[in-house]
Amino acid sequence: MSYTEAKHLEIDKIPVIDITKLCDGSDPKSVSSELHKASTGLGFIYIKGHGIPKEVIELLRNEGLAFFRNNKSKKSEVKITEKHRGWLGYGGAKMEDNAKADLKESFLWGHQDKNGFSLDNHPLRGNNVWPKFQPELEQYAMSYFNHADKLARNLLRGFALGLKLDQEFFLKTCKNPLSRASLVYYPNQPSSLGKNQFGVSSHTDFGVLTVLCQDSVGGLQVEDINGKWFHAPPIEDTIIVNVADLLSRWTGGEYKSTPHRVVNKSGKERLSIVLAFDPDPETIIDPKEILGKTIKDVEKPITCGEYLIWRFGKAFSYRK
Image 1 (cartoon, one colour):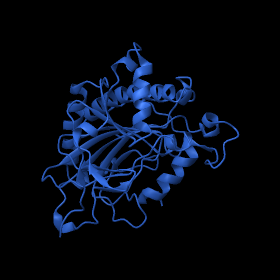
Image 2 (tube, helix red, strand yellow):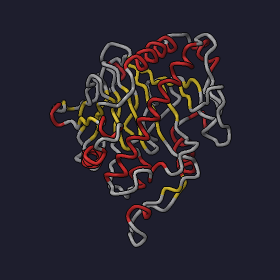
Image 3 (cartoon, rainbow, N blue to C red):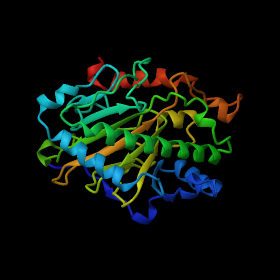
């Protein structure tokens, strides 16, 4: 048996964009131009100057690894809720109808205020559940969430400027966003499991924007426009940002939502930290807002909340 294959991508061909001047407001237009170019190509971008402190990342990474190393009985104390919060064990996710279940575990949480309060008014938004046996996880997870949320908002301002829109276009209904974060744990994948087993099988992300913090282990692969798969290697001090399906839909396909997958053949544990940024559930995703009322052959308007409920229902077995 063996692993599915992917080619090595030349580092100098990977878009690495320093967004410092977007975040501090000193030259947002030049950064937005780079973001626009990268988003109409591969749709996967490595970001420098992202503003998430290294200590925030490392504290959460170490706490996350400690969580997943617990036994199943203990992790089940925070088993996934109907509002998509908590621990999702192996076999709980499948990104393609005909694929094997993903070889991964996840721990998921969403926004909460300083008092620990979360809105509970949507099928994908409710109270976070935190493990009592690991009390510091909540603090570290929320610190990362808040930093990544700020980064995502800055990026969406850059994407809007790149499209010659008002910089707040994608954020005009983001008072109570549906964003959620996750720790995603991939064990080493033995070659005996064969070419059809993945940490996560080929998929595009559901929502508007994904902020992905890899570790140094590697295993992420992306598909180019020609259908060829390439390794997306870790690059120190960068965050990966990828256009997700709703942003691609919103822009009439101008921004590309890139298929990607994970094969962890490193012999080590792999942990990713993900923020999936989405606006308020009632946000109307309508490409004619951007492309004009007379444009044809674009997707019909849909709310962010309706779309995500449909996609989650397909991907996660606990929702069936």
